[in-house]
Length: 289
Image (cartoon, rainbow, N blue to C red; front, side, top):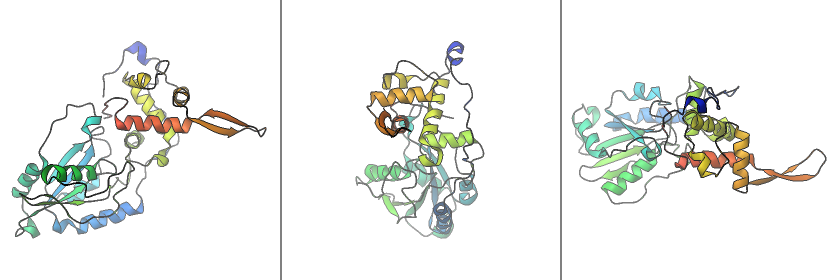
């Protein structure tokens, strides 16, 4: 993430984000529990594990269960979405690295097989399906084989093996995104929510937008001011969202206590737009850890 601002600037903004009573400590829908069970059962057919995680949160939210369950297989970590993080992207050839890991390990039940089978794992919405599709495009010159979505949880069940390379013959197994059952620290949960790993309704888009504003101001990252043509940096989320709603002409009709209907800035629509703008990189490239 960008460097901190000057001490005089930082005094204008919050130094601590107040999380209130929001409970993000437990987030483990039933389909994730079923997914873990299926992934365990599929291990006999797998030579290597590729874990995909969001480069904006390289440490936050990685599922510790992955290490416990998949430790018996070679493990490669790929930080995806580097174009959205404050890093210098470096291209790594995935297939050669995977093949090297497999050939230097004990293949157990697959010793006689000529092809390589790789399971792709990760928390929700870190780009597993996008990675698979990109590898098919690079190595096979073929199109999408697995659906891609902006909502966490698009892949909810183990899919059929997907070929991504002919020489060597490599097949990938896409899996559902699996969150850690418990988020020990609330700020880790907020980072996950901001990157779209948790569903927005579990936290509240307004809360996510407020946390985003806190993060941007904490590091004097003021691109949001120019992007939305605001009057200047602000620590007041309602003020910021009101300005954004007016700029974008986001208006909602509200019924007053007297029964009349008035037009007001649509704060929820503005919050949604701001959070999506961050996720697309429109507010700058930021690493949250």
